[in-house]
Length: 359
Image 1 (cartoon, rainbow, N blue to C red):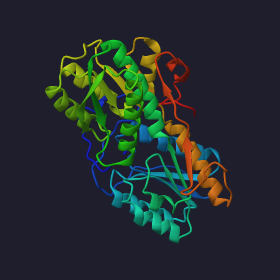
Image 2: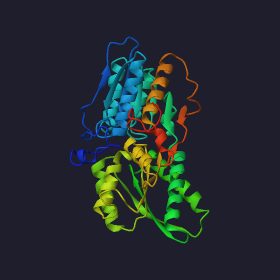
Image 3: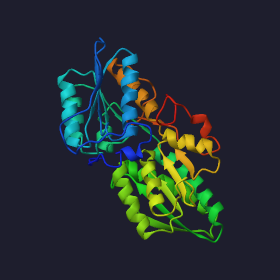
Image 4: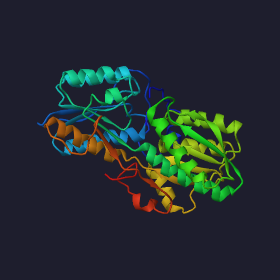
């Protein structure tokens, strides 16, 4: 997921995906906290890029609190509201509170160096989860835990390419648009690179098919910004054939834009092929219910599972132990790539998770 931006209340209620969609300001000092007190093992602090306004990250935050609390730890999760300076200050506050470990979903790959350095100087292990920091910073933390976004996106790209060729035929031109997250961020680039690898590998077997790329636009994982970005793109490209939406958090905004452009009817029927990422449960349920779903593939990065693993790594580090699963230099733990299609989406449907995957 992703960086430093402003969300507004308008549209959010209209595009709820059944998970948390609140709004935050940008760069403010206020935080949103979830905590469980009274445990004696100590405090593990969690600083998230966003909590309010991003249902994927709120799922991760809630999962970490649940996992740590169940193991007897005091957990406190705070919302950096997309501000690197706020996140650094939150990390320093955790240090002053005597936190045993700190988990961060980082605001940018280099911007939070001050917080990481402060924790390192205090001897407090830091776990970086989901988004990544630069290799230099990654070597200074205890564990870097994330999905294999590029490999997962490659699976999605291959499936999308196959669906596009099946629909458009050989010797056709396919207009491809990527609704991206944030400019110049590793998570955005890895998903694009992976998708295009899977897409191009498939298309190499179909040399008569040409791909026309529609330039990316960025929605910053926020529904209102994604709606504006999509509207702007569709206004100039009404012949779009395939949309790769880099996060299901904003899938309702993507479909609303398609409806507004006359490319999808109110029932959801469209000739546009859609590929997704993050495994939003509403998207997965819709895929499972309809073998001819417009969403032909969706990449899973399992926020609840990542959260539980991050807590495990933090606790092991506090106890001077190792899980044996975060290895190498920088120390890294990667979830295996996983993408679902309408044919197997039913295996991942559950009412216990907002985003598909293991709990």
